[in-house]
Length: 419
Ligand SMILES: [Zn+2]
Image (cartoon, rainbow, N blue to C red; front, side, top):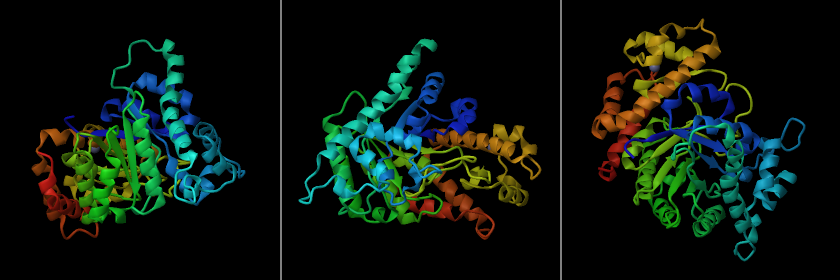
């Protein structure tokens, strides 16, 4: 792999970008409940667009104390989750039926041994991922001429995972057990394990060492990372530095590591072994564990955001216009922006401005991923410092503080950077 890959969270309302900007991203992540809901349209889309994808089994969602994410306006269970429960078996069906959260006692006996529910959920979830789209795609394959490229389609299967906040958290033990057992019943697809934890967990070096030992087993081919609500721009340098350490250790046997919610820092983490990151189209580059899936409205929220490439962050359009007026050198000159310069003003209809801004974002992301091969790592790291220094004194109006924190996280971990 010569450059970091970029995956998009699949969301039907963003379909236009997926087709129009097909060469700007590498594949899709799709959540399990969305897949069950849109399985036919996703399968047809997938066959036509022919991109790699993987499925997030979303098992941690059932731990959430707030069960409103599962409910429709009448108080019943949403159809998508109901459909998912059919595939996931008795433990999940029971949770949804009684409108309660999943408990560790669903998987652990009083003497701390594992209940049969561990094996049941594990096998159901692994087979769900390999069978659902395959069945539908083979049914549709008659309509699509030409062989799909080898790289397209389901890339790997993800083991069930739960959110944990310490090594002594019973959910940690349950997740590790699922990973261990998954490795022994692995089928034809590569197997990925998910690490879903807090920033605080990442501040302890000993946590990282133990976690890597427990998760990095033979039979496990890669890892997904989800750090609760870690927006890279807000992360302190210790947490981000330890994220680099974690990635470095997990990728030591050339295993793939993918950040489920990330941005430009995850691209730089390529030099420590991060193979890919996932986000929405200029949204959802961080996610809190308790944050529900997106329901209705534009996927990026009501206010469209503009990605300022030099500052490696996005800001609401009005801010972006003020900023680029005062600092014209921050204006983007990518293909999209050059062709649509007049769009960036307050009179443009919002949804149209959003569509141009999102395409600009995808264009920037592609360039950023490509730059990691063309430029050397040192040059990219020093650019962070250079841009921060250049705008020091304007912190009140320019979002730049993260550039210094990223630089410091990188410098603190320079010795473990991959050659
Ligand atoms: Zn641009």
